[in-house]
Image (tube, rainbow, N blue to C red; front, side, top):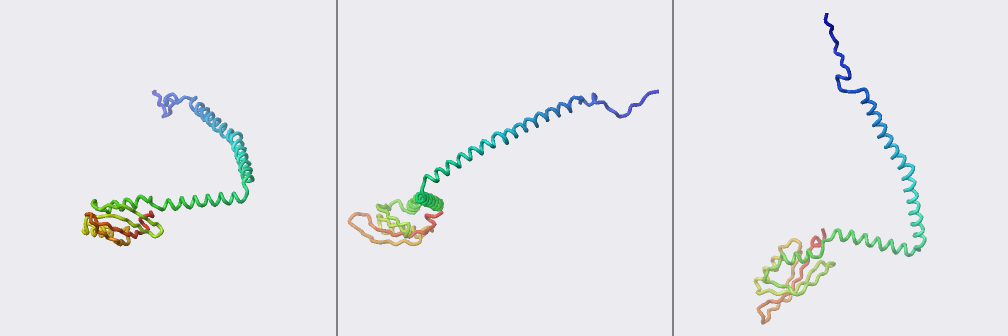
Length: 181
């Protein structure tokens, strides 16, 4: 009679030896031991070191605090406050060169400017310039009026001399968005 074998398989057929679980367990134990060593080193070595360094810094800060009298501390705090306020103000303002970009963008090639005075408080620019003829001068003023950053343009002191150029003064009132972000 032939013997039938049940569906049992030995570990040799699977390719897994009896030593594999022990190797995995010992590798895991080594990794755990290493992690435990690092943790204990941090808790009992590095943490006290950091605490002592923090204590030393606190002592130095208190010694420095005592070396500066209250009046100087108030002056330093006031100065620092001014610096922070100026920094915040500068973050919201465009550089002044944006005004020159605007002037360059809205000027005909035949028009030239010789003097520029600006008052940020009054939001006003006064420009002395010259144009080759009245038509170009009027076109220039119309171009300025069409610019959205400019509220008002006033043409002053038009002087036609013997030279072919027409001298003029222009007062330009600009909006706050020209200098603010």
